[in-house]
Image (cartoon, one colour):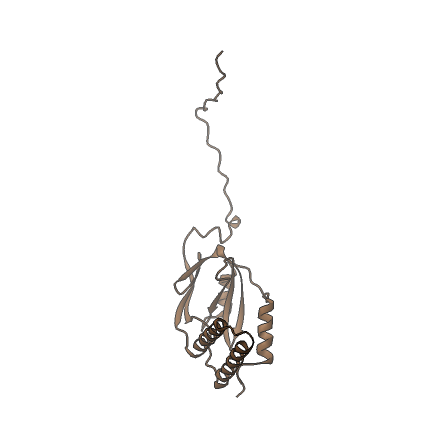
Length: 200
């Protein structure tokens, strides 16, 4: 007995194509439109990180703290590997405070943000806000990446409102940014125990 063969409906001749529904431009978000025209919206040059020349009291305080911590570790823990790590952190802190940063180029385009030689697509970024440190305005951008978790763009002489309007086309603006307990603890420590005499 012959097996049943599946039936195939023959294609209809002269069948008109299905109409393609047009999608309004408002449907697409900026992230969905990244594959379209690549256009630089803003570009400026500024230091790679915020920097202010520290007072001598800053280095004196750091030195005293490092000596106290090292003596404490030697007396209680006898962990020389930890001492090496502490001295390494102290050295990096000294270099960042003493050596001024070089200037890099920041660029905001329709595809994402460029910081020096690093580029980040908009869909890897989450939200943004502004902070002022040592009278220097910084644009902070939260990322969806493990590293870096946050981007920092030094504004330099660039206008804050102009940057805000451009970035707000792609990312939500956070008026009161979330602070972790580590950030709150660090700010409280710097407020009550400053590392330098800024009023000197």
